[in-house]
Image (cartoon, rainbow, N blue to C red):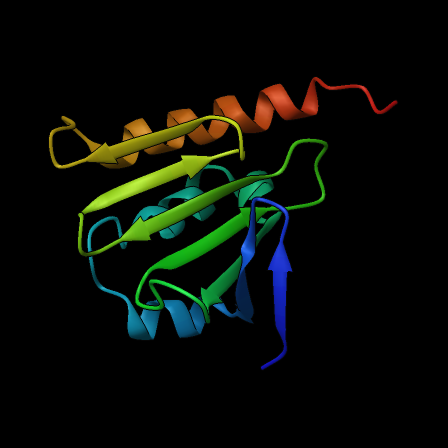
Length: 122
């Protein structure tokens, strides 16, 4: 797999991964997030590209909503049991303390996507 970097995590190297590969290797905290995102918000899901880190935390799942003015990252971390959402400037962590981590994460994803789409290109 070809290694690449991403502006959200510029010092990391990644390889692009398929959702099939993700679902085969990952069953940790938040593992149903992308299934639910695809089911309820296919327009957002269609912009998601999956990555696997070659630098750090290779067991985590990384996905970036690409092709929008302000891209953002979704990270599933099985060790800390959190869903991390970041646009490179602000980061939100959602964990087992949430009443429903999937609803909370998807609501945050919708806000990130909507605010990005409201940005007019320069």
